[in-house]
Image (cartoon, rainbow, N blue to C red; front, side, top):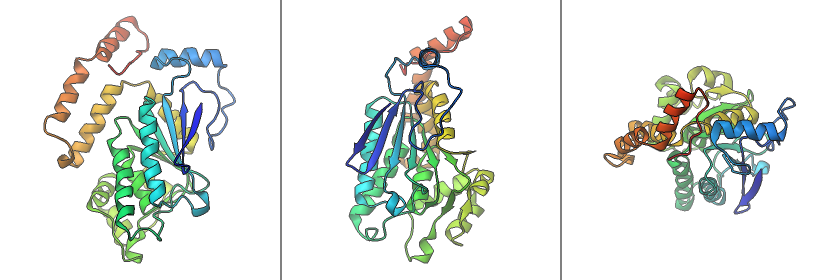
Length: 288
């Protein structure tokens, strides 16, 4: 496991899927195989070489302010996602330090254009990443925190998590993308209750609505990320792009989605999938 800091505000842990050591906030796994067995099994699933990072844990580290976002943390988050992608990871887990995922925007900064630009830069980094992003929601996700959760592809939340957009209590607003995304994931009625009624939704209710896909902690999110790291990267990148294009057609260039779709069928990974079925073994995808 390799750890680092981005602009001194965001923690980035680069992990191999076989790394037996828990990340900060992850429960120990007492029944894991020994390191040699784990590396061998991981290589059979993903083609990972010892030491290769496959998963990044990107953590907002401002627990004294319940991980509220200021301009510095938004810029750091964008840089942290970039660092993870540059390392070649196949999945990203986004979480917060302490007992909050993100309590929203730092209200001392929300009135400036610099903050708005930095926030949407961070959101675009999440939605535009060519790998799946899992939000491990370890506590309240409020306002901008909910926006971060919405920008992720998948969401795992602890029982203590909650979701809210209290902008009407502050005389503020969120952009149309946030409203569309919330309605898409939670349903139009629930989205209106959250935004117009300033309703706070607990984790179990969010799970019932489909806003959250799994209930659990960071260990649950990392287990899911490990599974995803063994899947075909080109297929995942295409599927994410297609989902994004369906929700926001203006954000994708014409022909881009079909080109990515066709590239999957002609890829080396497609041939590997065919060989693996014939040989009755797990495929080893290389993203080519």
